[in-house]
Length: 245
Image (cartoon, rainbow, N blue to C red; front, side, top):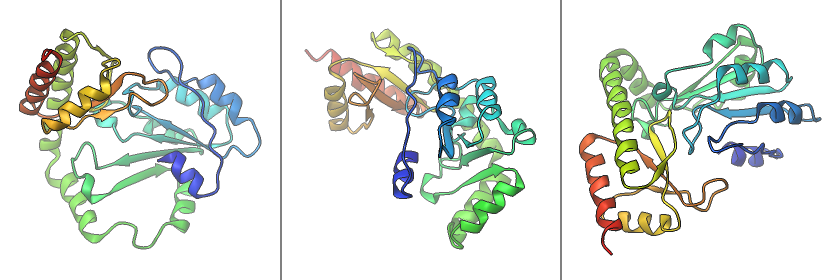
């Protein structure tokens, strides 16, 4: 979506490839590329989607130190990771952090999130923000989530983390390579049959994301970690598919 929004606003997108089997961010190359004229914004997604990989805080800080561009750190999946760059806001004027209620609070339909930055940058965003960008009901729903449902959310996040570990083991036992994840989903390398497995799962009423045609992700699917019962259904369905022949 960052690339799409960039194009809509007549910007030019410059991608810096991930490196290694762990889908690591190449901080040195980002810094080098940011020295080029007209580089205005750097987007870092932490944890990343769909790889589930993270960017160490020291790498983010090094980028902040060595660029004049605004550095936007997307922390949509932060609650499943447990770490944040919020402490860096005191040190860096060019840091912007994005958060969402869609994942940790399970209210994606409300389309609500928030931004953290120093007051000067916040005022600039405020000056171009639509006056009715978030509806009243979404605002009230977010307030309710923050004021009344904290324990429920913490419990759900804890359950997802535990189920994430269990799914990694279960899928690994089926012979798939499961990449380490700090989000509420797993990137799983199934191989050449990835698209076929996705199609057959859909026929069974289970939808997983086919990412096998994307850069870096040949043969991979992205699976959201859900409740224990739903994850059991998923594992059972995958076993039926891979053993049907």
